Length: 173
Image (cartoon, rainbow, N blue to C red; front, top):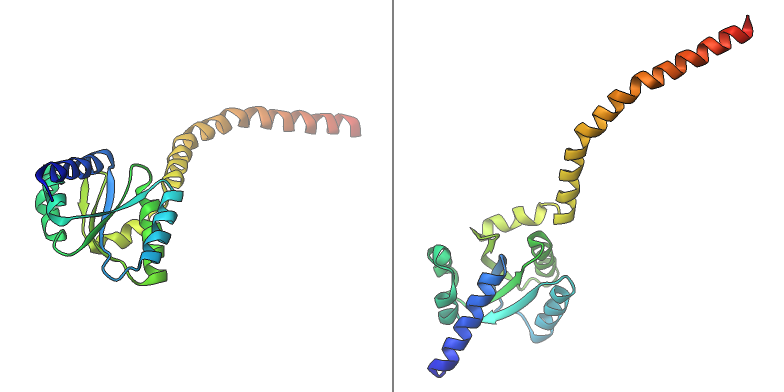
């Protein structure tokens, strides 16, 4: 491969790592072309992508703080599944494919700029999705306000019940 082509590929991979905050690295050795096509199609549906990289070029492209952690990962053939969206959705899609086809061997990854080893991948898969977490945060933020609102409305409701009982007592008398 000529130097100018190598430099272009290194810049391309470097841009991929910098642009996308989340990427998982895995060994694709046993994957057939049909399986790779199916995985790419599945990832594309959710806004993620898959790229097979040359290890030496990828090592030159890795951001400096993560280079030490990712160096051992780039020893066997490596594919990169990446997204700039929901890291959990990508992890779940990869895990689902891994369980169905038994061909992916996760080697590590980076989630929002933090290196994770293959042993922590299952923890990420078990997390709820981004929208679920945002809904929970919204609910937690709204809970004190709704409690305060109920507290303000309680005396008025009690006063209404008291007036209704007084009206019923006068009608019976």
